[in-house]
Image (cartoon, rainbow, N blue to C red; front, top):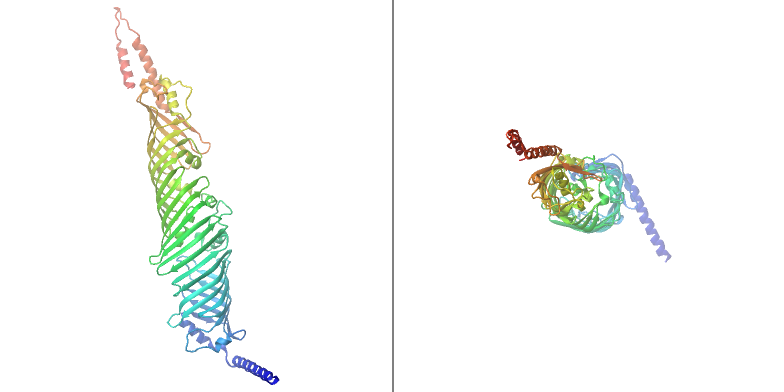
Length: 622
């Protein structure tokens, strides 16, 4: 037994001695730096330009290989960079099993330390991507489908940390001129970009022509991440939002089935600050068309509204809407369906939007929503290409509760009724003030059962008519005015809303009007004509002097619809003065007519002067 053990130990020592002698011989007789020209030539045959300014040294443990320092490469146009230290090794067992007739690589390892890489731009007119402080490790690399670990880390986009750790299986076909990845499987994936972490697994086939998998994220702060990336890509940087916690708790879970030459589908469950949404993405690669559908029960948009000042430039008002379309290089379509959208002061129910995009141009083919007890339908176009975005909107609204709408949007509840409207407008601007100044277009409207609470038009008319001998006495006037259906036309010009051919009635008083609303100042001025068709303003109103019947009496109304704004309506001063003047003439004329003139012979005759004055009166009172 002792002889057996002794013989075994002798064999081991002999093998180790030969192994050590082989290493010593290899290091003394073979200088790997002598192979630099061959290495450069081999790289050049694959389209890689190499610069090897550092030394190439042997590595024997734990695997045999070489270590190269100061490596520079250019793989145009994909990538270029510098590598501080590159280690390439192969296991001893695989070294002795190399089949020289096979094109497959043996199992090996790759170590990259302190590298800087510059990748090609992701999209036209975007800066290239630079990776700094790159460190990577691949143990027991295999290209014949055997599993091996991979880990890497780097800094990207202004010191954003990125990392990946996974188990990888690769099957490479090296029989053709260019290597083809038959299959790649990535499992136990853990990757991170700043505070975003992604886990899951996926597989790809035929040089990534097809892929399937499932990925999910942690709960991460999207606002923080986008603001960091936005230092490199300003077009995706977020403006300041009303809610400080908006977009700070995001998570998602996706499964996908992609085919780069056919159709791809991505199903995602997205959670935005504890508000779940379902996102379905479909891509038709044959025509480079993206179709995106978002469905949800309820989404509170209040905290995501821009808090920037109205002077903010470069389309900040529309940037969040345009972002998905601007990043997609082809044509795109987005459908949004929400049971309820919560805005700062009101809710929108049964919201549906269908948008088509071609990079920075958006076409809205459908907008439908229930709001203020009525419905809104619209189509439109938004062009983000110019410095000042332009838009065109066609809309119709029906049965909108005006009192609710105005109290919410204009902080005024003086007007009630059901609004129906058809409108086409266009304009340009980066903020609300610019847009109001640039509005053009118009439309027509009608209001069913309108009521104006600030003024009782019948009382106003009766008080004015009393100046001309009408019976305007009444002590129980109701507050406000109930009108018949109101209809008219309107247009926008230079920051003003111009009202034309507005017609309605209150009792027997027919009213026509026109006016101007200054949108920015929230002020208005209306010129109205009231005409009484009958002997009284209404069944319970005041009687009207015959001279005022079937005659227009002008009124001027002005005021503000801002909070605590006031309204003032009064008859036109100039016409009233003229009519009062004529009224004095009439009284004087009646007195002259009733006074008999006795001549010297005792006869009562008409005076020629009286006849002339009567003609003047009749002419002025027609």
